[in-house]
Image 1 (tube, one colour):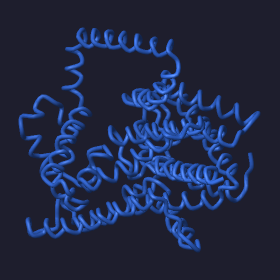
Image 2: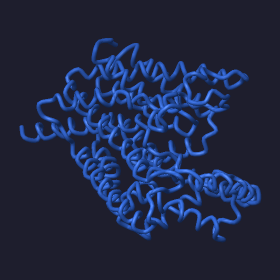
Image 3: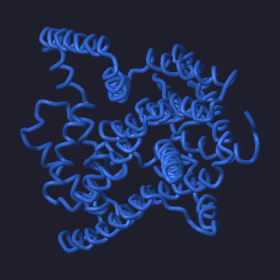
Image 4: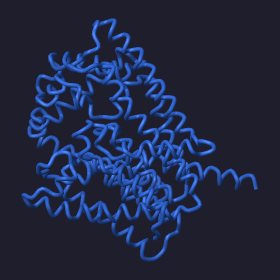
Length: 438
């Protein structure tokens, strides 16, 4: 464990990335939810100061998709104006709103490229990254422990750290709500373990990392009210479990029996509790919001498979959503929350990164999604080294979370993790090519 200039730089960027409820939001809006926006000029200067700018294949795919989204947004600005003869939607100028929305992917690209370049340039001093990641894990462990204690009291835990100072009754770390914490925790549970194995760390810090990872998972699982966290964790480790079971006939048979029993028990409970389940679904504002958003997003995609960009999203998504809410498709659900989205462009989203981007980029987003996320997972899956198993789990979790219940626009922890995985994948391939040429 060391503390030097590189470690401090890593720590500053990582801490800014996991801080996603920064009070600057109250002054400048959503983009101010993370201090990353303040670091962006410095990261850009570093990128441009390199004699040669290193772009990975994933970076190039991201840049192509970003440019396409900018282009289609410009096209739909014109279409919206011609169609409605105004540039004001929900009391906001769609040119201004489009520019605001474009800031997020630009900042993300700069962050991704900075971390990719900085780590690549200093890969021979990889223990500095381990030091920063381990210290971050230590901080999260301490923060989570104290926050869990304050859940039992009426006191507000460190209100000055958040955009709203009122009491929050769930674990959220440095984010606005509990659903945002999953990717942070999973990243800093498994990334430190990966680095321990990759660097062959022994002794005290190895066991500290193991113990903290176990503690973080168990402590959060016991207090979390997030409906999707444990399910996504199980789905994330399922491919690894299946690959291991293939090698052991006894465990494979036991797993099949366990699955059958689970399905039987689940089916029985579902039948017995069907009325309660139906009541929960129909009265839950969250479910009504999700279901209506999915229908609206898919409708926009079907009507315009090439995407509508950020400008078209602001114009057409609320209209399609209103049409769906007025139809009989969702009459049985609680729609109070989703109706609030029809009066303002603030927080206008499906709450799913996949569905939002499906409207922005259409078919081109599906191509990007495969090349940037799915292909990355498949490539890591081909690496047989045990170390890389600990990269695949947080990658799978982050991708599924982005499909189901979070957006990525200020989830900078996800983008830093993806940049780190990008570097290690490239280094592995270079080493493999060198070994094969010998």
